[in-house]
Image 1 (spheres, helix red, strand yellow):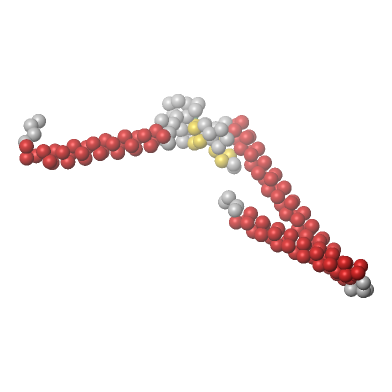
Image 2 (image 1 turned 180 degrees about the vertical axis):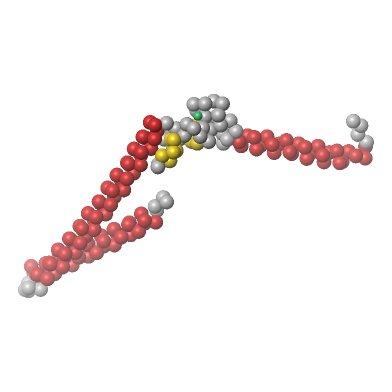
Length: 164
Ligand SMILES: [Zn+2]
Ligand SMILES: [Zn+2]
């Protein structure tokens, strides 16, 4: 190949374009290697392409090895069990939270009831004891209402933060 002096510029441009293309290809290749998309094979079958990643242990497996469970993909029965266990754990935690919420609700209702009862009794007579009763009743009622409000705010927040 002979390069005429007048064509140096166009040759330089072609060279730069080829160089950029090669760089781009290398860049894409390295990204694919980094994301393991290119060379990811089944953990059990080295000749098969992996299509599923186990949610329990993170192993990549082929379509045949992947177990589809109601809690996501697993690579084997043990991992499917682990996933079910994780799910159960979360369900247990959610139930526990619901119980706490119910207890808080009942607790604040009890507090409001006590407060109103104290206020009611404080109107039965005059004197320091009845004034104290009124103060206690107001305090209990205020605490109950505030606890209820806080409970509601936490409940609304946890409703908004649901993963699904
Ligand atoms: Zn697994
Ligand atoms: Zn496989």
